[in-house]
Amino acid sequence: DAGVIQSPRHEVTEMGQEVTLRCKPISGHDYLFWYRQTMMRGLELLIYFNNNVPIDDSGMPEDRFSAKMPNASFSTLKIQPSEPRDSAVYFCASTISRETNIPGNTIYFGEGSWLTVV
Amino acid sequence: TQLLEQSPQFLSIQEGENLTVYCNSSSVFSSLQWYRQEPGEGPVLLVTVVTGGEVKKLKRLTFQFGDARKDSSLHITAAQPGDTGLYLCAVAAGNTPLVFGKGTRLSVIA
Image (cartoon, rainbow over all chains, first blue to last red; front, side, top):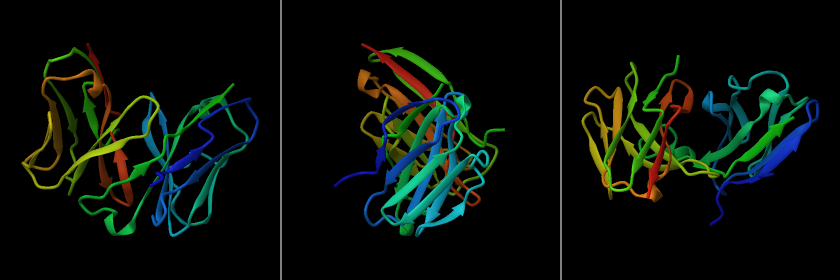
């Protein structure tokens, strides 16, 4: 079975440009998460959705960041305008509700989108 | 202030050595997870511990949850180059499904 699929794997863009990261969760999963990973701050939760509805976006750093989930099989994370400090690896992850916050819960991560803003 | 403090941050050892890494907090958790992240990949779940004092073994890896459910350790016996990676602990906290520590970056040299 396919895991969480993210695109692009790598992106280099100039400061001020718009960046769109894409994610396809595992089929049947109803929770989707966006994380950002840097050496300094580790793995930080940006936002998560349940049944396509944003539940908690308190981790989104500022208004330049936005995320959408138009349907159960697709989500985007957009940065506009991008800045060098946004350079990081962005992970999408998904899980199924019957396991969330219950021992044994498994969150499945994609391979990440490596973003460099110059 | 980090909810989860992991130590050491970096660890470089020779193949065949034993090691222990730690995950500590001042908070009590109902469960705690360990993930391993290999270079260029996303984190992958290794184990979930639930009961205070619980010990779980996964081949050469031994995981322990502290009696007070505030901390955990991961012990690797006879480390191999394939164990190289970033080891992350994670907990559910408040409304956040999963909060991660910053991890221990392990390098096993052949």
